[in-house]
Length: 357
Image 1 (cartoon, one colour):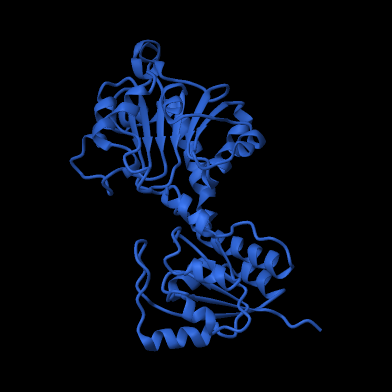
Image 2: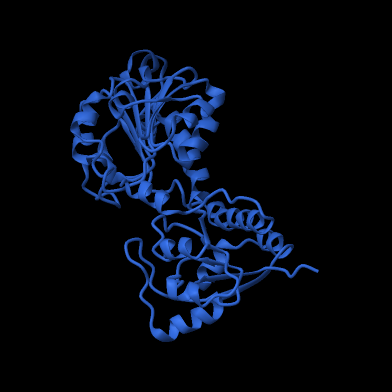
């Protein structure tokens, strides 16, 4: 009889309580034994956790007998020393958020034949939904109407609906040209959601192959084309050294009059001052879930512009998205232990792309 694999999770109690749904844990336990061990190392997006010798010793004891280990907030780093101490370890999984593998030595894992996967794309589902919502809000100029209505202004009379400029900005999504900056998980999910609207898609992403454009039926093009031609532009790119301030005054000036600019990725990709200046002309609309700086300062001009709809970085923070990280990880573990290829492998090439190298 084949011995059941053993899977461990190293993280804080908060992650264990909020990210692990009973249905997904039950699915995992159908093919593997599971053990959670609480660790509370400091989490950072920019640096690896630094652990005391005592914590590292405890972590090595925990990992040494596992066939797969999942790490998340609170976990020490899975370094080469830890990997060398293991007997059966075949997979390391990063559960959420750490796109740059601060908790995993990917080089060491690759060198020792240990597969590395991550499920950071779990939040792509709600982000893409909110991107679609903001596109629709922007095309209908809904932010401006809401601002008028909540001030108890008389708004929506027959005469106003015929003559007021805010009512003339009232467009359908169907048949429009949509530009996407970035073609990662969020964009691919958004493309699925856009299909019923029969839009024409222009996409800028220097890291995706032309085969993807063919299979998903979009046109790969330059950033300038994506900024200047579409009716709607959605920024979906990750923040890296190469994408910081990628959308500057020159690119913002290219946006066609009447177009909608949506950002659900990171505020620092856009030159905020240049965007505000363009919005002050009143000839475009923006729907922003992110801004630079965050939270948006109380005195910022962006708060008072009627052609702007704002949300406070909520696109990816649904309760469902948290449990989806583990749901996706269980699927990866099931593939791995069934002898199939995993889908979301974390390699040096992937990390280089994420860093914009």
